Image (cartoon, rainbow, N blue to C red):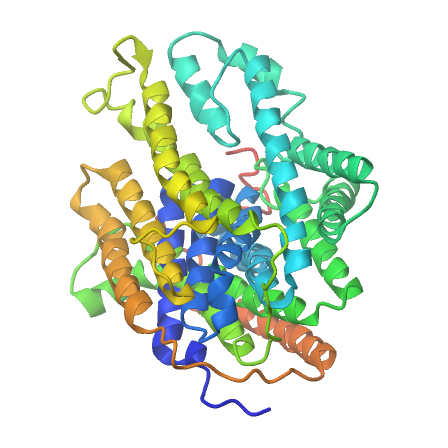
Length: 553
């Protein structure tokens, strides 16, 4: 069947919208970091792609798109990459080439999982899509219990994942524990500085779920493939072959590689060609984005380039420019892949829905959990560190407790009317149309994150304008795009895709060849510009040879 109009998801303004959404999220992630921060661009880009899709069935599923997009992009947050960027700045030719190749790989792994998560809601029927929530929330619950257990083990330090180190830093400063004592406690946990314990806990949680339910559902099988892939990659590459990408930094890269392969194998077994193709395309743009953004940064910081273009040396927040550029280029992949599927993926129906709680759970997770686990970091990182912002105690209670009380109150205010609405009670402020709900969801989440990020950095110097200033302007643009680009009148007839398997093979081969050419071109250009000169704007790290800095963090 022919489409009535060209896909609105592939207009240049739509592509710009999705790319800017992911760029905003990645710029904000630079302040909050790790897996929690990486959820933000995933949710924003997925929602933006839905809003410009022209698909009424996608509008209805925007909560699922946001949730699984966030989860998919979060996986790469465990990979260490700052030393890899530094290799490209080093002026040492072997390290430079190695750095660009590794950046492409890291970007691909990160974005491939993100692309798969974003595409899930476009291809899975409601039964499988909502059933996937059960093992997902089971794993999240297990990780919360893991953090509480570690909190007890580490004498009550604040945890929640990567915040462990911020909490420990505070305790060290207060003299509650010595560095030697903490290092001794951490020996068993710090196995190659990886997330091995989280993978063990996730695997155990899924196996327990399988035993309780007496069956292996679609989602549990996917989770087990991902966990098994992580162990295969880590065991084979790091433990078996002794490969370390950025010694002495962590080796989560090998686990992430195995995890990505495990995901692809599962998708192939399930014949989910559309999700696999999206993961490849978005992954390729992620590789291009990570290595290409570093290339752009190295061009802009070159003294001769600055003199010719600006007439003087320019000092800026170049790392933030790199991050936002990476987000923008990766967003191009999301925009193009999802725009393509907006006219070709099969229509999905959610009539007589199973698991009616699913939409509410996804909205609350995105709006409350993702915002909380990131904004709460402002306390330890900024507000309590600068004594003139917040005192450590207010009326005899720790400030953290007051923050949590405030967030619980906020959660009740949001959750109560939302649950009532889904039970059939009309709430005037909530739009009746699916598109209107999606627009409200996107804009509210966007500005919640932007303002939360701003609160972390105020007061800030003029150098921060390149981060918070650009993010603010881009958020304004995205708000306009979210309100004016979608149209309920641009519905399209879906064209069933043909030869998905062949298209997947062609994309894989073409992408591999293009990746080699991209990395070679980036390396050659940087050698021509910088030669053996250290570019600065990063620590000088060398990966190979007698001057290798593999013993430095």
